[in-house]
Amino acid sequence: MNKASLVDAVHGVLNGTKVQAEQVVDVVFDSIVGSLKKGEEVSVAGLGIFSVKARAARQARNPRTGETLQVPAMNVPKFRAAKALKEAVK
Image 1: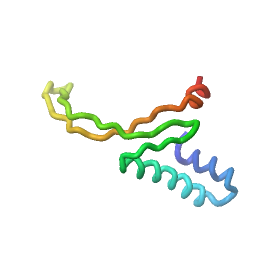
Image 2: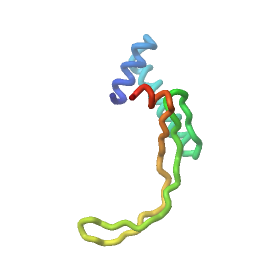
Image 3: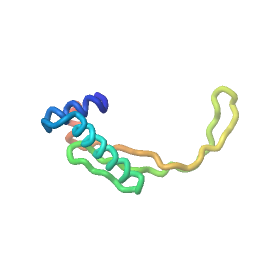
């Protein structure tokens, strides 16, 4: 499934135009990304929790050259699946 499939599913439920359905999907995605940028958690009941995790700076090695390089600290997205999602996928 991709974004276009999600837009088609929302379009089938809303009975509006595909443009409106795409706007709904975009607003949901933008809201999740915006909250994560602020460092907030996004919890969707039955689906899971989106959060941001701080990853510390570290040294890595280039596998081709063997050269050691410094990887800076960064924030990365994290997702924890809800129990209902885990049960549905079993």
